[in-house]
Image (cartoon, rainbow, N blue to C red; front, side, top):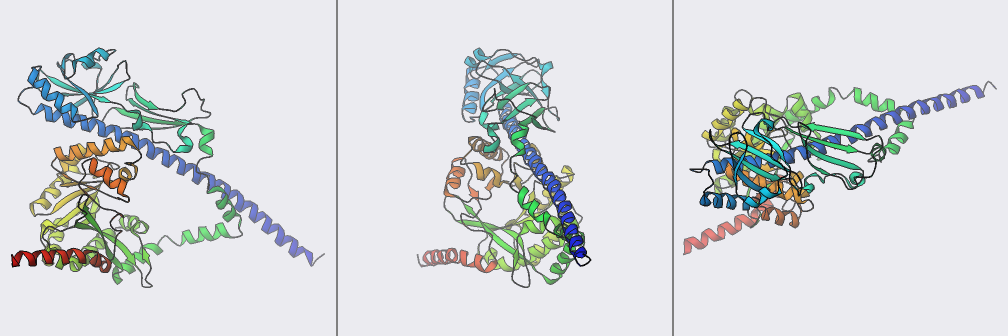
Length: 527
């Protein structure tokens, strides 16, 4: 019996450890899955809100353009011009001339007045944060619409009637689509639009996700059946439980995590010293001709053993640890050295470099950038500084001043990730950038979601009004390319032409272009 006691104790310890680790794995997996579900639904709520804000921005830009005319009145010629303006913007159903108190004087399409079930007085309209716009619900027999009012002068205002398309809210994953409701409303609770497949189906223990706009009196809500939500995206539960049940697995993970506090940062410092961060180049091309007009430089970590670590695996840590600035300058110097012959041979070729907002606003950024580019003997007008919109610019006035200084020196400035970041297009205009880059999210859905096409068309129209150019990111299929061209986008980048490439492969990609240009130049000299 004495010989069996250690075996029994060992088995009991293994069993106890398995139970404890299994319980911890169960709780951890449940918590992780619920957190991921909440995060994804929060992001979908944000998408609906952003789409709604873009619709308001689009209507506001149209009213500003109409307000620049010599007179806004009810003369036949003026109304005809307004009708043409409305016809060119499918998202707007009508434009009305109103008195300061909000009462209607006339309408571009007078027959739409017959569909109104009522009209809100000015005092009941909801003001935007900057006070320039007022929003209200327009009740019509065919469904509700959104009214956007802007004062033109002391005696006249214009109202754009924006149609609320149900496809704007059709964003839920297929598993949740029939068990959820997506609602857009004003801040006073008035509902503007919604999407639900079965209004009569009860939702048990419904989970609600809300988001309000910080610029306009808009509020979005997603409500999902709790029972269906609990079974959604839970594929990770059993693998996590199996891993947790292994003896020592959880302890090993916790121990590894405890040692990662300083290890990864030290690895970044070592890699910076060794020059292991290399520029990879992704072509930016004309969507119609496929001609390569420039490239975006992306940092990749090339280790001593030849393995390559993509940006998403180290850029967040570089930003949070303050190493991103040194990394950016290192990447830029390498890229300028690689591309100097190409930049000198083709003065229209552009090199785009990503810069985080904190780096843009740091002391000496403009002077360091200018000195680095001039030392490489490259024209400043061939360098595009891309500022991501995913991180908020804390000081817009200071950022605008930096952008102005960059443009005075000849640099171009692009705003990256437009449509999913923090700024509205009115703020982007105030920043004074040259280019907006449409986020890959919209490119991925443009061929399957009609509302995405409307949003892209709005972005293109507003960029044109702001005298900006547009670049679409993440183009992977011919169908996406054709849809973007149809929406008015002229330039893009993505795997359809090439993934980010090391310099040697990028040079091979550009070689046929150089040969064609040399042949054309030779023919011109002979002629």
